[in-house]
Image (tube, rainbow, N blue to C red; front, side, top):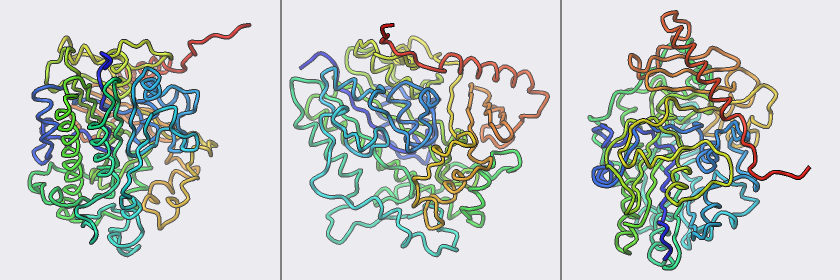
Length: 490
């Protein structure tokens, strides 16, 4: 085999960072992640995505570019054929790349041959994901207060199933089969982008009943909406969850925690398979989510495209390096971004990237040489008025009242202030959000970690605001474009 390490990219969807046991949440059931960080890995408490929805975030962490560099700001603007994708780089470098699970990265009409050797399709057809998104069953009456809640509760296996079997189970079992039959003469990369714990919030036993409801942390309450982005108030009004009791919220949140517990179990199954085949020690393991989830905070569920609360932008990020690479297992407090992921892979492999990007290798942090990495992290989203191509008008089934995502998507598809272009600059202590068509935001995160007190007009923070605006200007100057490495003849 090549002396290059195997790579496992385990990528759950919509997992917020605080639902992890080793980060101090007593209700989280994540024994595999917790054990890994105790013995072999580093977990970054302050890791942040660059966009709070799926496609823009994935385009960013697979390229090392912020969304603004090439306009990857919507679910329908994926990576073009001439743009860099880490999976393609690895394939070109001789890796056998196996890709299971969801896409949300490259246009399906272009195919996957450039990015992987195997785009896994299970022989046994899993139940369609649309079952959970259907406009009947658990959603209830369209006039009721569960219709837009995403709460599905305990899931039951079908009469003809020996056990519950959905797309994520199919992907995980397919990945295990590939590990056991992987080529011996080439390094492999497994890309495992799962759907869970993306809502609807539903999971089967034993994970549904595994969560101690009494240990769940307090929710962030609904704020004074006059000082928050209008998109949040619009979603709050349309989701109609204001009358929910705290007991109902606990059940919804417990279902989400159960989904995370199931993903942790599936992650453990892959690690076990690698150990059984002797592959584990020579594997670099990356576990991270693309973005987070409200899960009841602010009285909301699901996510938004242009607000940047920590529950949406702060994500799990755990790295176990291969043998021979120094690691000081712990929870790191360093500020890091998901665009640091491809830079870390390149550093591990000794690769010089074929394009300018803005990630920074995390190897010094893994080794414990430092716990300082970035002074600020950034996320961005939304659009300008007139950018109809960024309204996601393709989401026809989501933009009608029967659509599960209607409370959010309906607001994105008209020219109000709700879907305004916006950018976050977050340091350890403060968060500033610049917004085009409505009030900016400024939070003192030490005094107000729940981000309910917008102090944008507070003269006591005038110097802080000025410094954050200057930092944001520097960020845009540093990352405004990426000049191709290849030059042209005149």
